[in-house]
Amino acid sequence: MKSIKFNIIGIFLTASLILCGCEDFLDRAPLASLSQASFFGSKRDISTWHAGIYVSLQNTLNSGHLLWGDARADLYGSTGPSYIRVNEYTNNLDATQGDYSWQNLYNVIMKCNTAIAYYPTVPDASETDYNDFLGQAYGLRALMYFYAIRIWGDVPIVDQLWDGLVSSSQIPRSPVSDVKTLILSDLDEALKLLGADVGGARKYYFNRAAAYALKTDVHLWFGENEQALEASEWFFTGATGTFRLITNMDDYRTIFIDPQTSTETVFTLYWNTVETGVGCNWCGFVGSKGGTGVSVNNGFRIGRNLFNQFVDRVRSEFGTDARFVANYDTVGIYNTVGTPGNRPPIVQTHYTVAGAAAILNKNIKYSPRPTGTPPPVGTWYTVLPLSVEEGGTDGRCQILYPIYRFADVYTLRAEALNRLGRGTEALQLVNDIRRRVGYTADATTEVTTNNRDSIEWLILEERKLEFITEGKRWFDLRRWGDAKLIQYMDPIIREHQIELGNAPTGFTHPGRVLAPIYFREFEANPALVQNEPYGASD
Image 1 (spheres, helix red, strand yellow):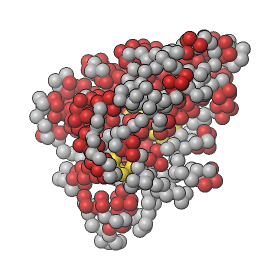
Image 2 (cartoon, one colour):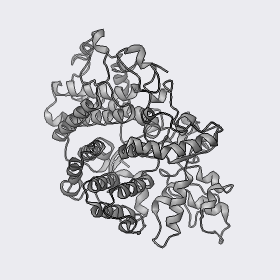
Image 3 (cartoon, one colour):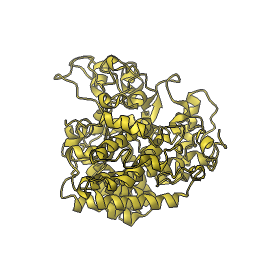
Image 4 (cartoon, helix red, strand yellow):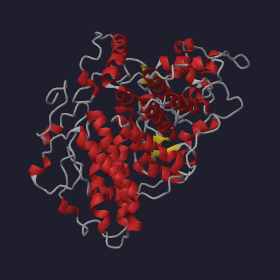
């Protein structure tokens, strides 16, 4: 794989000029200290600054991609009360949780603001030198604001460099509608500037395909179904065959192990622990046994309902489902519940069988294949956390985390078609997604083709199986509708509360579809107002 260099020198230079490195995103360096003379003196400085943007993106999504987008949903069970993140598992977030600080997210935004302001002013840089970089900055700023409104709702709009006045740092939250306008404007600018290359290593950077995928997602979030359909159309008519569904089950794992060679990869966030000094926290939340001897006590395990759904598919007359073996170490289960030459079929009760249950605690989506035919008894798939030599004893790992992939566009497009009364077309797209992984059941036989509610849920359930541990499910349920989310999640939350020995209070407040604003934000910006029911600064 081609190495993706997030220039270490660039990181240190970026840190010295950091816009958000203090207590709060509003503690920013004034505009004057970021003049051309002090930093942007040549076009090499564009690449240096740009490296810092992607490091900040890693910092933002390190824990956030799973905690913000998945952890509170219906995907997970607990590996035990000592390990589970109780607040997420029971949807009882509070404002003292640093994981719900928006500091890192605004750090990305402010670095993008700097790029937008200064890239065109670099003396020896032409438009050819900086346009694609500039397009990435607009696109990443749009992506960060899209995360922000789905997590916190109304958020401050910061799209300019600070003028140094204290009064300018006290920025109230802007309505979601205003933030949406900025997001779509940024995407329009990005599409004017981004180059045509969307393949190979370019998939590790925000690209033209990512802009269209994000545009599809944004329009669908706001119920703008025609616009979502139009944005998704680019993948079928404007991408000249670049993106195609895989044609065999073995290629499914390639999406996560070697994304730059996959025809389904759109935009993947690259982690390299040597270059950045830190790994991704994904393993610590849901990840597999460590190949360096670190066995991670992750708190979340993929829930029994998903396991049962996959087993039902494997035991059905409609083939299998590659996503089952992509997420669960079926080799390890066979070796645990059977003996060589006598490996019984995997059944739903294995979820709680000693040995097999321990294996099922670990997700293997980003794990290399085991070796041997068949793999020897005791073989585990492995995700490699940081080695002891690198100082990582907590299971942080190097993974290639997809932010958008072609299956995203496919299923979002299916949602848009269904909302527009084109249910049969939507279900055919679901069939395409299923058949590429070996499951041949016809979705058109499972629901009435003019029942939009049933089709929408079928699509969401297919997305649930497709995007396990990829930070999508909570946002999918919110797009379905907050009232529906609350009604659906309330009994699940009650089960989790009872499991942990707590009173079954359920969802408790509709405002809990959003996250709290981290309490320290109020210290620097008194213009903020907290989300209900989290209190002024609880």
